[in-house]
Amino acid sequence: MKAEILKIDTEFIRLQDLLKLSGLAATGGMAKIVIQNGEVKVNGEVCTMRGKKLRGGDTAEYDGATVKVEL
Image (tube, rainbow, N blue to C red; front, side, top):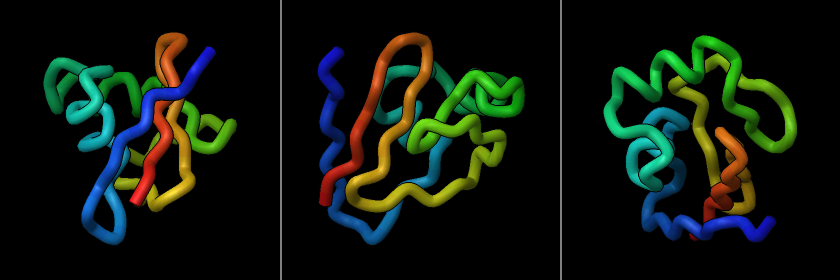
């Protein structure tokens, strides 16, 4: 599967914001729940920290979709 590219113009983006901005989560509440339930992977590993900082080159996976952060 091809990864969606999310370009940011800041140093980092928080995981919950990435899910909302990319459309993988409809709301911040939904993003919080799926992250805390261990349904999201960051760089191939399950991540339960919704404030996790993702920088250029990092990837997030949820529900069969992959988003790659690019500066």
